[in-house]
Length: 147
Image (cartoon, rainbow, N blue to C red; front, side, top):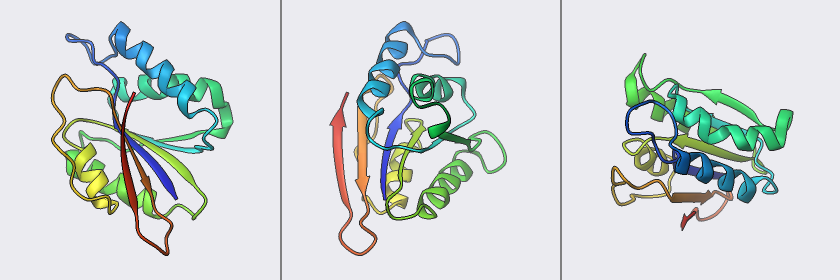
């Protein structure tokens, strides 16, 4: 199993939406991951997480299933984190997934999936992309990339 975990792309300062830079970053992400084999996507109920996944969904169509796990209710951010971890843990071994979340939930998701702790994500950081490789019978590997 491989899972990409990231914060949504650049946020509009006054709305729950992506800024023009965020839209550009989301398109770049889609271009990067379109050939990766990703077939499962998890996001919160925030519009900006859906907008981050939209270009990838446009490229992959029905090959990408998106599941929303609310970060509002029930359970708030902790419920969202636990739902993403449970969904990713249930994936079969060759599966590739992506989780688009928030600055306060990316770290707990990575840690809950066995990737260890990560540095806090700053409010203006939108370019970290974590790749967790879980061979299911060996050592998990966590890569941090910038995009």
